[in-house]
Length: 239
Image 1 (tube, rainbow, N blue to C red):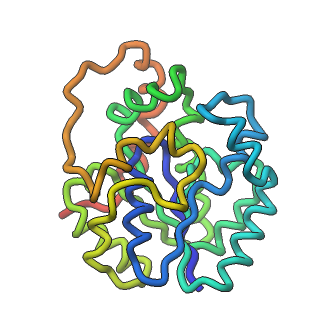
Image 2: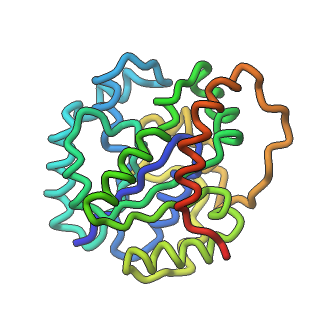
């Protein structure tokens, strides 16, 4: 039994990475199981939030217990988590997983995020939570890997191979491609967030943003940058 938990922020190509891992034999994927838990503990407004609350378990502890129980019947389980969904939960749960982190430069992430969340906050980015979770895992003797989405898009085969090596699972070239369209594992929120990945058949080539950074996001960018810089310094590099 192997449980891989991805801790990402929004707009970080995390869904594409979930689709990639779903191509492996004997791999089951789970999409953001703590989403309703997060919504029930906060006052945020997300697209389709009531649908999420109406259809998912609100109790994060029960969610985690169910994951561990179901994992007993699965050779490998990949969980795509948003880091900011980890709220009011004991960090010791993470010791049961193989944890990896996915980050993206906030200068590129924030202009995308405002399409769904017009007034995002630091909490919405997940960056501070990623730093806290990462430091906690290190302090407890773990060695989680951090992947930057730009490097993943620039060299998907090389980065995926190194992720798999780190996780002690076999890499397969099948991870580079997937069928166009939604997956049955997609969360009910997919119609609000997954349009681009549903049009894809693999990792899209990296293209730098060619638009001016929105000035209203400058204060949030300033908040985000130290957390991103810390995580990037620890992240897997191409060379």
